[in-house]
Image 1: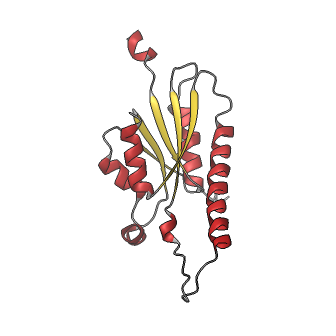
Image 2: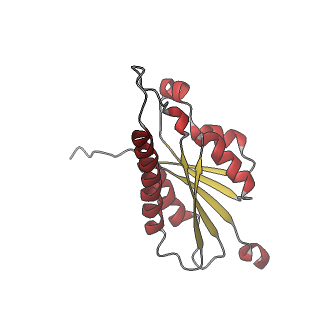
Image 3: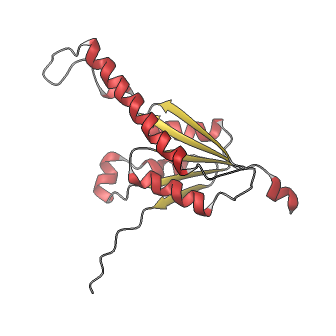
Length: 166
């Protein structure tokens, strides 16, 4: 049993700008990560592909290189901001290695690929809680990953705020 406790677990947490991913990280820190363990916590932020933005806007005008560069900077700043917030949440971990990773592409595909490439033991992610219709149109990143990765997937739902009727 001592061998199992000493094994380093590689835990990948997918983070983004949403409250749901930060809640998933917080839940992971409280319930999955063991203090004084040899766990490695990998924080993954996936920047959507720039192909989402064309160099032409909706009216057919060409975006200038300055505007395209500003959009790239914004994406970089967003990634840095999210990862800094996530790392601050991890500051009290002592023997746990925390590593941040930024990748580009469709989050569904990239998270699955990185889980495989990094030899992850468990994937932790938040759930937006989309309804059936919205999920059908937008797709569910967490559902896609749960169906396609080979390791266990822990999907943490953010509790709905409750209003007391006192």
